[in-house]
Length: 571
Image 1 (cartoon, rainbow, N blue to C red):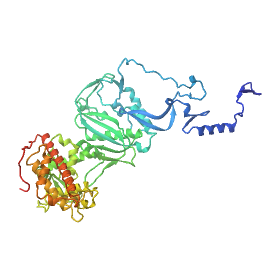
Image 2 (image 1 turned 135 degrees about the vertical axis):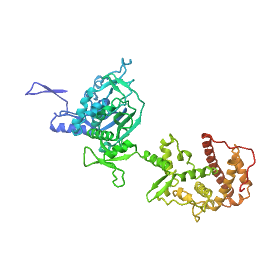
Image 3 (image 1 turned 180 degrees about the horizontal axis):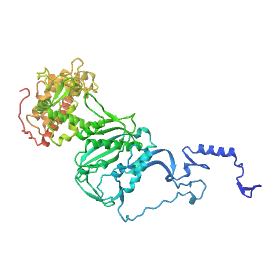
C-alpha cells in the first residue's frame, strides 16, 4: 500500500497498487458491478448503496405483521425495508467481532410481576366522535383522540366483547393501502344473538357494563334496562381468510330496525374511511333486519323489487343486500310446514302431504328404498331440528331425487296407478349400478349380457342417472329379482343372524329359476354370475344394516332371528 500526498491539501490518500484513482467512470462501473452482483434488492441513500447480503436477516422487514381480531395477519411488502437501527455488519475480510449481528435483548426468565392488561376500547366514544362528512385522515385522527378515554380491564377477568379499537382501525387502514384492490373489497355482516344477563364494573372509569348500549341511538328509557342480546358487526374480505369485528352493541331484545339501519351506515362510513371497499351487506331474515333493509331502500315487493341501496360515501355506487342463504332454506321449509303447501310460479304448488305419503310408503318397503335419506326429522322436525340447515336443505331438494323435475314444475295430478312398480324401478336403477361396476371385465361377450342398448331405462334411472349409469339387460334384471326375493326372505321376514349371507346363497342355488337367469358367456357364466350375486348381496346387506342401526338409535323394535323357516319366494 503506498500513499500519495496531495499538493493542495495536507490529507493523505491511500491507493491500492494497480487500481486507478476513483473518477466518475470508475464510480459508475462500481455501481454497475454492485447491481450485477446482487440479484435481489439493495438499499441506497443519497450517499451510498448497499445490497441486502451485508445486513442481518433480522434487520430486513419483508412483510407487515399485525393482529386482527386475535389472529396474526401477514401482509407481504412490495419492497422490503430496513428497521430503524439497521447497520450493515456483514463484510468479507472483516474481523469476526465486526461481522457479528447485533445483540438482541434477552427475555426475562422470571414471571411478570403483574398479569398482562389489555386495552378495552370505549365504543361509545369512538362512534360518537365519528364524522360522516369528514375526510379519511381527519376521521381517523378524531377517532384516535378518543382512545385517551379508553379504560383498562384485567385480561383474565374481562368478559366484555372485544371489538375493533381505534388503533387497530388505523393499522388496518395502513395495511390496506399496500395491498391490491381485490383484497380491499369485503362484505359487512351483522347478526344478533341472545346472551346471558350479566353486569360488570370497569374499574378504570367505574362504568357499569351490561346495560343497553346503542351509542348515541340509546333511548333514555332503555339506559336502565339489562341487556340480553348483542348486535355484532364485522367485515370479511372476499379474497381474505380473516375477519374483523367493527362493533358490538348491547340491547334488550331485538334492536329496532331504524336503529340497525343507522348503525349499518355508520359502519360503512368508518370502513370506507379506513380504505375498506364495502360491496355488500348480509344478515339473516329476522323481522328487525328486514325492517332495517327496508328503511335503506331494499324491497321485496313484486311491484318494486330492489336488492341494493346507495353507498353513503359515494352516490355513484350501490351496496348489495344479501339474505343469508341457509336462512332462506329454513324459511321455505317452515312455510311448507305452516301452510301445508308452497306456491311456485305459474300457479304450481308443492304440498307437504306429498312428502308424508312418500315417507309412509318408504317405511313399508323391505329395505329397498328410493329415498333412503328421507326421515321423520325432515317431515316433522322438532324445535331443535328446525334449526338444522342440513335438514332444511335436504327436504327442499329431497336429496337430489327430483332435481330435474323441480326445474320444470308440473301440475298437481291426482293419484294414479303407474305401469311400472316402484320395486321394479329401484331394481332397474340398481341393475344399472351393477352393470357399471362390471364394465371393466375383460370378456366383451360377458359384458354384452349385462347391459342393453335397445331397452329404454325406467323413470327413476332417468332422473338419478345423470348420464353415468347404464341400462341393465333383461337377464341381469331377472337374476337380481331372484336374489332380491331371497334377501328379503332372510333379512326382513325371517332372520338377520351371522350366517345370513350363506343362507341367501344357499336359497339362490336351490331355486330352479337361477339356472335360466345366469349372466355371462358360455365359458364364464358360472364365475360371472357368482360375482354379480356376491356384489349385489353385499350392497343389500349394507342397506339392511344401515336401516337396522337407524331403528336401534331411534329405540325401534329389533327383528326376531329364528334358526330356520320363513316364507318361500313368490308366496
